[in-house]
Length: 255
Image (cartoon, rainbow, N blue to C red; front, top):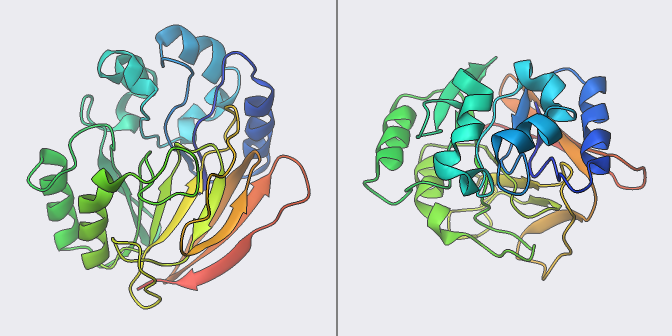
């Protein structure tokens, strides 16, 4: 898996071209973590900005939508651009298998509270899930970046943690950050915790870290792609920067 969000900054596509060249060099499914065509996710911005960069990999991309994609009504151009790969139009959450793993794409731009349609769908999805599990959406529950934490994603975390999920991927803050395994309220939990990665350096204007949050284990203010190798009962991670000088690698086992 190759994951990043916050990609095609139409005012300057230099960095998006650089991360697209990283995608050229690596096989695997691409997880596009939202905010894919700036600033409003219009059909023209997908055509003129996303297509010349990440667009050549559209056939192997499994995206989720970001808040900028929703600046176009109902994220209509996003759903039209990706078609069936984006899940049901208007919902934007779906699940699929990737080898021995279950992949769960969620939508942090629609209702997530207990009892919402997405919450009930996820609850049912997790009821009979024996596989290693990775979930991804746009807004981070925890971040050291300037946008701050998004506690509204907490109900999704609670369901995933109770079901023994392993990894959560997010974007939104234009940084890279890896956290230690945590509970839904941010406590260290090495036995059952979920490891959250923020991979928001896909090409949009970079952010600076605001303050270092508890259990933040690795941070980088630069462009790049998060590479994950998902194996039987384990996973490996490696951050691939567009410029040399930063490395973050490791592995863990599934719950």
